[in-house]
Image (tube, rainbow, N blue to C red):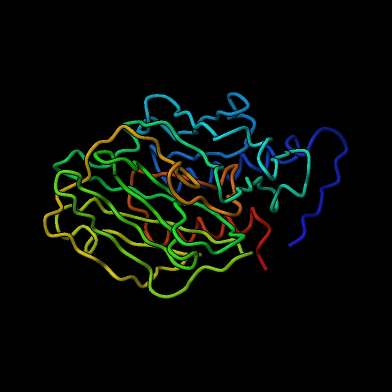
Length: 289
């Protein structure tokens, strides 16, 4: 869909879109709940420096302070530079980052808020993102909390560029319960909305009882791999990487930002919640109809 520039009587595109974003922030924060965090890519109100940004927390159940995210380099220096004055760098009213598939990503600083197991028990959480792939390359790390031995917590990987794998890791046992979406469900050149939810079950039934994957608002059919000796995730000290990790494949394509994506929630979102988020995102991206 071709972007159409709004008619501006005065001010910038950001000035025009900021009050629209406010409505989306409010609606989405009500759904993701107290303590929910939006990682508002490219929103200038959350830019700390050329290479850093801060999260946006809803109410007091989230992190004690906003978490800092550090870009691999300034988004304005990416191979496809971010430019909030260019309507072509928006989808609908939403700015996006265009990652090169090689070395461009965001690393969100380690924080207790982003850890969902204490080695004995897990807790419920959900995370989501809007993305649009340029190429279907195996093994994109879309979300990754920990990559080094002893630091792995949870990962969301685009397998073969066509399907989705989500896994947790118990570092003490080395067991990785996981779910993988059945079939080829991703297309290049199309906006997708991915949400992963977990009820915090823990133990050997972590994937059977607790982990679900939604794509474009629909609950997906998955293959579940159990881990009988799995107890819980363990607190690590590494960043939450979005779009890739330094030693692994990176996303080749766009990730939507502003008020709609990515986000993290301290509850297991319901199918109804996901459907509402999907419709809000479609409207913001100009994909309705």
